[in-house]
Length: 308
Length: 270
Image (cartoon, chains in turn purple, yellow):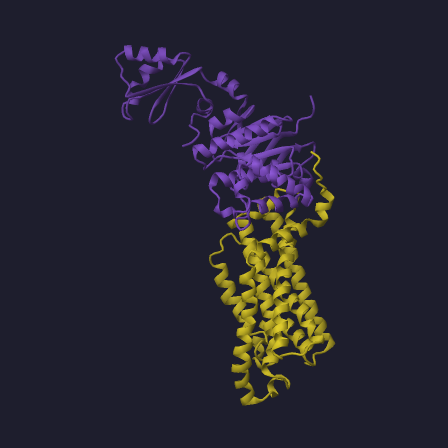
């Protein structure tokens, strides 16, 4: 196996007294789609800025394409495409101008960039918007343009910091589709997200982070298998009665989490469990059987839900 | 990846790529810029030339201004002042925009471009745009017969130096501020306005009481005005003073730029 594109060992970043990232280690191989999953404040964006060779670290080692990003910033950045959490496009310029000036920052020839712009406009589904000022675009379009911009230099690694936060469901699905195509083309993706479904859709491998540390590490399916049951039964008895039934229910399943608004019961067969509850004459106001997700993994690992 | 990314080349020319992008944004405002660059000198030339200037000359002739028309006396100061405000605008707003409003600098810094190159690029674009307005101003001074063509051409680089020195320092402050709310009020009212009034702009610095004169000494506008007067007409300042004025302006520009570069690098790496 060839060397990993990204190799992080014992990475720590402190801001004064606050330890934002605390001894994190991981590797990303070529062509892999790797996700950093965790709630706000888990340290994901800090790691991304260090991987993007724009922020320094307090301790630990980082190698991107065998180079220390802190020592070889411009050289490392020449191989990266970066999609920040907040779009930082130039709103006064048009869609194509934004792509053009960005290509110039990589020292690319005008001819190369102009050809590339055609390709990227198709990819980002923005052909019609070529000469429109960026400030007139919708949120989803801006996001797609930011991703297209990150691809102008044909990067080896694309870093995406919460690519779909703030988008409506339709725009998110369009974006996932675009990212999935990149993955198919063999682009190495590193993304952060606090959406479980996003991580499950896009990532081959993820680390689950909380408070600057890695809680778990594996493929989405593997993590679910390891930390959760096959199915989950969600029941609600009304917020004041959930606690009342909890002790009874706890004995009926492998594991249970009592949330303020609902009770999650982990079992191999959710429907069967629901039948047992009904047989006991306990009638939840609502019930739902679903497959276990990364959300459940996170809850198991941290005792907290991901989006509060 | 083989798309022709030449990192050493970017290291050499990166600042120019940034400057080119800045000028592209600036050119989106070309109509307004041209209107301001022509209108502003016109207003001054008309108001001072046929208003204040006539009043001054009717009462005291040209004895207080070294034997030249009042409008000609203040023209080098007006020219330098327009360069100062011009460079400042292009060094302050784009920097706050780059770090805070649109965070464009963070996008630029995600490429092989460095913080140093961004600072220099923004600065170069500011100077280039100001060359345009200073040249227009100069041509209007010629057209209004305020100065004679010739060695007065030196007023142009002198004015650019004034703008460059003050702009570099302002760029540093703009890169430093987190909250811009009161920045403009303080700078505008407590720095720009006094500098405009007390830099020997409308009357020789020596007319002011000695305790007010230091305002002029530390003002790039005064140094540029003295040099500009020497270029525009025979003002009679000594070679030593010429050297001092040039050194002051250069030192201020270099200091401001060095501080700005350091601050850009720090803030981007935060």
